[in-house]
Structures are given as C-alpha cells and as structure tokens.
Length: 288
Length: 276
Image 1 (cartoon, rainbow over the protein chains, first blue to last red):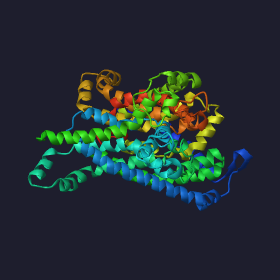
Image 2 (cartoon, each protein chain N blue to C red; image 1 turned 90 degrees about the horizontal axis):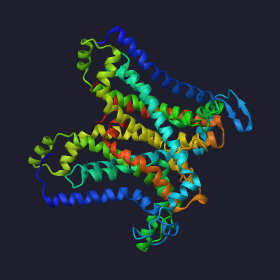
Image 3 (cartoon, chains in turn purple, orange; image 1 turned 180 degrees about the vertical axis):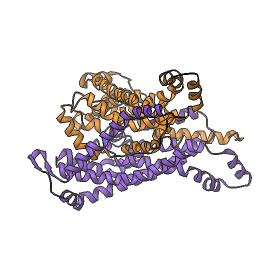
Image 4 (tube, helix red, strand yellow; image 1 turned 30 degrees about the horizontal axis):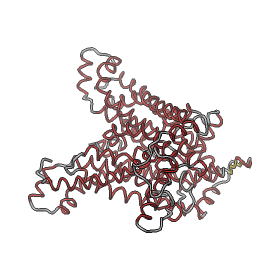
C-alpha cells in the first residue's frame, strides 16, 4: 500500500530520530574508546594519546575490578531473585478475588514511582537508621539490639532498598501476564482434580515464562546501572562498589579518565552481551 | 474468571493482600507522617504514629532554607521539556515505521532499543567534557536534550506499538477519499493516536522526573532538579528527619499521583510492547 512518495516521506520522518540517536551513541562512545587507550589525567595535565592496552590491563588486574564484578553480580543476582520470586507470588495474590483490589494495586505499585535518591534516603534514615529508624524501634520493642544496617550489612541493605523499588515492576508485569491466561484451561485442570501446586507448575508457570524472561532482562539493564542508591547511602564503601560506581569514581572522582574509560568500555561490552538476549526476546514478539 | 469463591476465602485473600500492600507502602506512609512532626517528635522513641501535634512548619523551612520551588521548577522544565522534545522527534519516526514499514524498519527499531542499553557510565566523561566545552555544564537545556536522547528509544517504541494498533484500512479509506498525507495525519490519525500519545507523555515524564544519573552528575546549582536537591540531604550536617521527610514528600507527591494513573502504560512502555 505504500507508494514511492510515501516511502521517501517516511525516510524523511525517521531521519531526525535516527540521526540524533546515532550521534548520541557514536560520538561519546568513540571518545570513550579513544580515551581508553590514552593516559589521560586532566588534573595532572597528563595526556598521552596512545598507551596501548595498558589501561585495560591495569583496570582488569586491579583487585577493585574483581571486587566490583563480584559485588555487581551478587547485587543484581539477589535483586533479580527477590523481585521475580516475590513478584510471582504477589501477582498470583493480586489475581485472586479481593476487596479493594484497585487500592491494593496502587499501594503496591507506588515504590516504583519514588525517585531513587528519595527511596535511598528514606530507607537509610527513616527505616534503617540504628537510632531513629523504624527497624530499630521495632527491635527495641522486641527487646533486641538494633541492627546498624548500612554499616554492618551494607550490601544487603542496598539490595533491600532496590528490591523494594523494583518489586512493583515485576509484580505489575507478571500480573498483566497472569491476567491474559486462559481461565478455561485452569478450570479444566481444576475439574480434573489437579492440585493448586501442580496447576501452578504445569499451567501458570509455563505461561509466565516469557514475561519472567522479559522482567529479568529489563531489570538487569537497569540494575547494572544502579547509581543514586549507592551514591547517597555508602558512596561505594564497605563492599558496595559496583562496576558502574567504580567507573564513576575513576572518571569523575579521581579523574583518571584513561583508566575509567577502559572500565567504561568493559561495562558497555558486558551490558551488550545481556542486551543481545533481551533483543532476541523482544524481537520474537515483533513477528508475532 | 467467574468462579464461585466462598466469602471466607475471599476475606482471607483480602486480609493477606492488604497486609502486604500496607508493608510495601509503609516507608512512603511513614515519611509522609514524619513530615508533619516536629524534629523532636520525629526522633522520639518510641515514635507516635498519629497522636502528635501535626505541623506544617517543616514544609516552610524546607522551602525557605533550600529554595524548594527552584528545584521543582527545574524538575518540571527538564522532565517536561525532554518529554515534549522527544515526542516531537518520535511521532514522525513512529508514524513512518508503523504505517510505511520498509525492509529495515525492524532493524531500526531493534537498533534504537539497543542504544537504550548503553550503560550511561560508559559515556559519562565524554558527555561531561562536551558539556564543559560547550559551556553547558549545570544547564537546564543540556539536560533537556540529554534526557530526551535517553528516553527517545522508549518514546519511539511506545508510540510505534500504539500506532500499530490503528487499523491500516482507515488510512486507505481516507486516501481513497482524496486525503493527502498532511490531512491524513491531522484528521485521521491524530484523533485515534491521542490516547497513546498521552500515555507515552505520562510515562516518559515520570521516567525523566526520576532520572538520577545524569541529573546528579551534570548539575550543581543552577539546573539541579529535585533528585539532586534530595541528594544534598544525604550529608549528615544537613540532616533533620522531619525536614528530610517534608522534602521527600514534596519531591515524590506529584509523580506518585501521575504514576497511579499510568500503571497500564507502564507495563507496555517498559517492556517495549512485549507484554501488554
């Protein structure tokens, strides 16, 4: 149905978006790539354009890199596990006939809309503060010694904060997927006498598989980039320095641009590997 | 699912769901409550839940001490500006891809998605440097452009999935009636596309409002939005529980309410149309 004229018009209409994104991607990325092979430390006025792979070797051979990779994996992995498992349970619950479902949904989804700096500070001060936090009030009430979350278990604390932010997202998407499930199939299984656990395992879970994949992949993209939550709580200390935060520190805090850029390129490569899987999952849907 | 459920089961599920919902919402609720306490009451142990002298003084102090309105205004400009600019760039692109799909439409869409996955930290220094060179560090216009670029893939994708649902036959009918491209867009497509465009605007406004990587790294005083305003409360000397709560409440209230209206669009937008 498309005529030749409309085809060229279409190209013209796409041009601004494509050009902008192309520029946004290529220009800074090329610069990062260029810096990553340079000894570039602006504060010391050092700029040597080519030092080969020195930055990459130094970045990957430092123990802080491997610590950061471990921290990133633990953090992202735990948050994914928590949000997906609890997300499935919550979605199943919200699918039940309950009174005031609309309000329940609104309450559960709310944490997702809280800006990262606010949720980090609210948790740090209002919930986890060893003296005035709600948790310490509760433990004193129960006769226990208050736990100093961000000092004693900093990584766990950040995992808790970020899980709170992302659980609504997982729940909402899984709930949407559950609601598209064919009710008749479930009823048939129920009439055949399949117990709830079996129905969940053989009907609901396979139906959710795609939504779960998408939740995992999208969250991974966002979770790899966690920044504000660390920035306002621990500043990357006490074993909470992720790869993103390490690169930020190298580039902006210690202004070792060459070294940080090498780290940035490594982060880009790692993210792209994950992106590849996500694209495949989303791409499948385009054909359907 | 019209299955008969006994009232007792229904009450049990309801009780469980409300308990969990309350726990999830609790940190927000607690913050809002604390914002109405005096500083002394905010650190009282054990804390009072509602039986305290409700006061609005924290809101006044926060505004006075840190000029809350300026940050709010910056947030509105940055989130609103980047969203509208993004919509202006994305509508023609999404329209073209939805109604005049070519051989490469699919590849272009996938490529746009891939730019979203670029970790921001990988391009942090170049963007920082470019901002310095252009003299636009801590500048609202620069953030409008940067946040527009970050969210552009999501905007294009969302609009694309909405436009895709407009039946092509309607366009053909309009064309047969002699409508040209311009009137086709203005009188046929736009009215049908408005709900989709509105949801896209809503979701992207929320995303831009809460963005906290570029806004923290590229602003200091003049262009700092609410994300940076709140982050300034993280230093211990500036910390007062009730005032922090008031500041937090003011930063999240507008977007929380917008967010409640956008639940459905959220799913579609953030899954790039893969889950509807």
